[in-house]
Image (tube, rainbow, N blue to C red; front, side, top):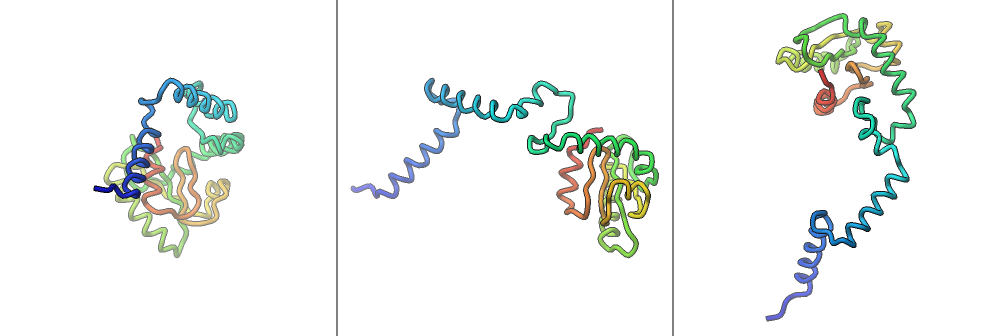
Length: 174
């Protein structure tokens, strides 16, 4: 019986791939090489270690660290505008994340998202608020399209699919 070369290559590739991803089975030499590679990555981008040393500070993606001042300014503005942003309740309990939908007249997408978010609020997932696009708070945030969304710690400019809102909602802590 003759083994086909393709099968040998396939089995070898599968075994090699499994060995490459199973870090528990590294030899001492491989472990040392891996340690050196990790060290080089951390030396090249020390910001990767920030969450370990500043656990009380919200995690910011490494790519956004250059924008730290802008992020902090936006968060400060959200705190300052919170009484206006979260002033017109639609539905929802008090002990859940707050979300304001920014709407405009004659906006079918606004109506559809408002209905969807009202369902979420009625189900107890969010405390929903509504604010018109021409409101001073929306203008101070630089919002110029509807629907847009404002969480307590985040601004989402423009319409996004429900799955994206769910992802952002999961990041909100209450």
